[in-house]
Length: 387
Image (tube, rainbow, N blue to C red; front, side, top):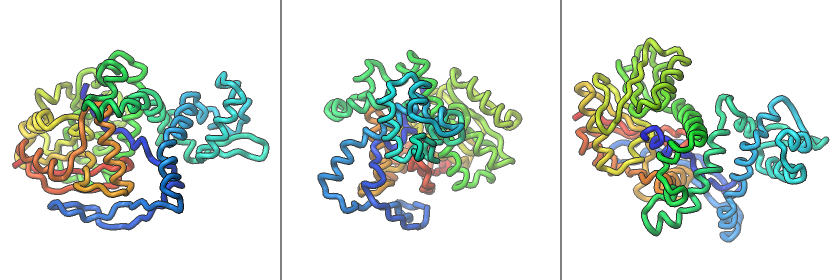
């Protein structure tokens, strides 16, 4: 259950507008938030020369390109093009698709920048399209399948969630998301693959932004297959680690840790974070866990970390921080849309800096700082120490 709770919260911004809808102004600033004061300037979005109705129409048709990418991922178009250009007729034969319709799909693929068409009418992958190949570094194919199938259907029930407070996923599929993936192993496999890929991207920015070398023992609570823990251990050679998750996740974690060459430095411990957490760590990290739960359950999880860690131990959450006041920026958009994604899928929510401070205090921690790490998915690192 906890692995899927983590996965729900890792969802990328679903309703991003096409790039031409806005012009992006980047202003560089400090990346540290401390004491409740924002010390960084995030990307700001300003409207182009479009009229307000034109901009809204782009928003309303935002699912069009998303579904184009999903269908291409489902058909495996990027894998078919990895060895060189092909015509749409050849692709139709390989995918058993309706040739005239696939040709129209490929034109749309070119239009959104995922493919290019040469003078002979053959298609090649752009760097963007290469990310839709399977089993390559930076692949988002599994994410395209996840967003285009189960989550696409769930978001169709957003009105139900807003009117009732219930999760749209349960309304659409008749069971909660955790139970759904237990009953549908193929969908669960896609979901888990997408989460590993997303966590890999976030892990790169986490290890670049935070100094783990000053610690001795890391505990990754609800660490899934160990993607984040492995990245941290590789960046901090003197650190040992524990990946803590449910028994059904353990086998995948052991394989991942072994493949990363970290068997001698990292162990996998099975358990339930509502019942306990491993003892002896001096830093406990939780990525995309707390926003999947209400305050009562979150405090319970964090208290187990508090009991398990050494005196003066550190707690580090990788979460999105909800602005106290939302502005029309790319960073704010990512957070508020993911907050809605939690409403739609799992019933959790994103929190403000003030809410995190209260949560830490209730669990016996003193929140020390928040680092905005500019991760691909808008994450921050919320740090606290054992009080």
